[in-house]
Image (tube, rainbow, N blue to C red; front, side, top):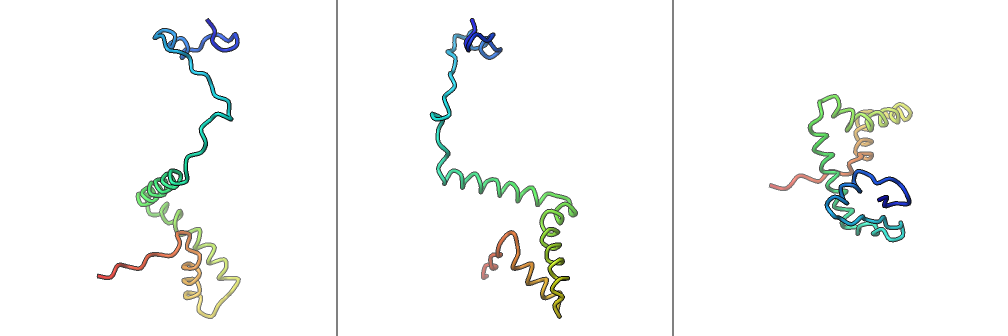
Length: 111
């Protein structure tokens, strides 16, 4: 027999009926569980970042540079030609450090 509003049963409904399972009714959107707590979302974000970092490390040389260095380097070189400072290498180095998309690096551990 049709389960939902006169529609023919789906393969899942047929399988459920064959084993004697009860159909599952969809909940209205207002009854759906709320978003996970912030700590769970933070954990998922951290896991995604770690996975991305591992993926980037395994890229071929050109793809690695295109993904990690080239975008900020091109931005820096564009700003460099507009600025035309007296010491362009030092200026570009400072630009790259200031605009590093990964943020400031951690100082090496004292040993």
